[in-house]
Length: 492
Ligand code: CS2
View 1 (spheres, rainbow, N blue to C red):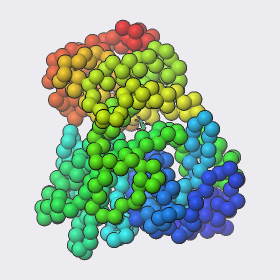
View 2 (tube, rainbow, N blue to C red):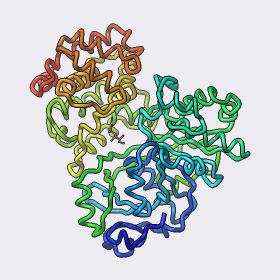
View 3 (cartoon, protein in one colour):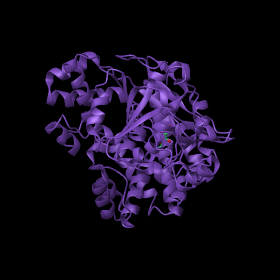
View 4 (cartoon, rainbow, N blue to C red):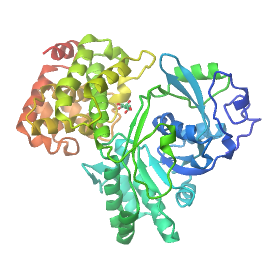
């Protein structure tokens, strides 16, 4: 991935590293000498702010674990970073801010345009690990199963040798390794899904079963799909960030990223091939990560989505601004302490009260402008794992669910408002949701019932009369979804 220095003299690149300001942290290894050991699918901001940074910490000792970053559909990231030799800047936002150049992404490919190169990488015996951050919707699931009607999966069933979906690529790579008699790679999901490894494994096996049952048996016997929990708040890149980085760096970086200083990665220690010595760079290796991922999804992500919908209805822009609104801040704290904590089984060493306090502190970080609208994206995929799972568990043990229903009703009111204002939703169910939103009149029973027909989101909870009743009451409390009515609902 050598850049032509004459064309990119003012661009961040291997060539410009030596002349960056001394305050910028640079790779502690020769970036041109690393070798690819990991293929990562979904080369968005979160991966570049999180896993790629842990690998960057490792490469000085272990240059054989560099990353080939694959985006499935868009060439934007590879076009931005290839002229920079894969280098990019990370702005760490804490009490003091720090700039760090990350060099762990050795190669960038866009699968849509460079399919053969992606498949060759997946079949390369030096690649021992495939990691993924493709967001909830990238798994093509319906409930816990593969959505066999998803257009990309339908396509891949018909052409498994030239896939479109992440599942299709994982299986195509494994198929060619099996044909060549190679050891399979471990497949490590790094997305915000409870039991992410188990769910990915089930989807992969269901897909493989349809295209080649013997391959499915081989995958079932040989391939490890560890679970993992990832955590670091990563606001999207905007022009303000680009301007700031370019000013401080003295070079142009086409796609810098930012995140809070805090970062956590817990991985289930179950691999079927070599793995990076993750524990050397601060990753927690564990044999039971289920409690960690549940805690993170339900407390942090559940609270985030609550702020996103109720805060957006109040016309608030960022998480830190929402935490400055006393009604919202105290609601979200009560929600975690009084409604989420009683309904969750936690790992023995996790102190819920301290965990909640740390989350509230992170949300208040004034250095971060994390837009509520970014968190509001993909609500149909996020709410089941973030809040509806808590509601189901609370119902099972007879805990009240009124508070928990307010953010769900907030999402419905948010969808209704966007639809009435003609604003498109970022959600894989956008068409269905916008149609429901447009049909809403403010009648709590009719509006809520229209949303509850979305089985992918609400089944089987929609059969529970107490849940339906509480949800209608929460929706009615939010009235017309105006800032004043949300403020009233928060004090009820
Ligand atoms: C956020 C997450 O955008 C969202 O939905 O809730 O990206 C959150 O910032 C991360 O999971 C924190 O680790």
